[in-house]
Image 1 (cartoon, rainbow, N blue to C red):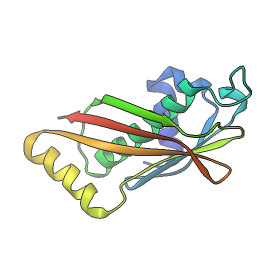
Image 2: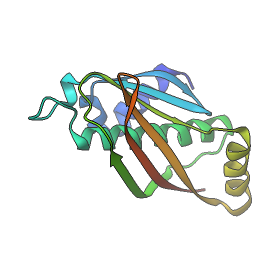
Image 3: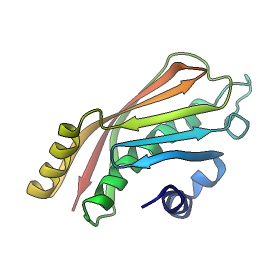
Length: 147
């Protein structure tokens, strides 16, 4: 699945995403990199709205899991975030990047091994929100997948 196909899937399946002003810069089973415009996500303080930051962070992690499932040819619509905790570290004052990745191949292999063996996996996904080269927010999200 390429970036354009993923974008179409997200905006069709999750209507809220049509209003988040984001593009997909990189999308593969090891890394998802989104860029969001401040204009569509601005709050009354002229910074990014916390709800938008959270939503885009969850979207990046969801996309990473989805792309892995696609690569491994595992079909399921049962991808959910069970728990999410976000830390807002600095204000987001410009367009910003949202990045989620499997930091090493072993994590990726373990994730899909557990899923194929037990038909269910629960994994902590970490997402960083970066603006002007600085990490401004971090999401720790526990995702659960059933097949």
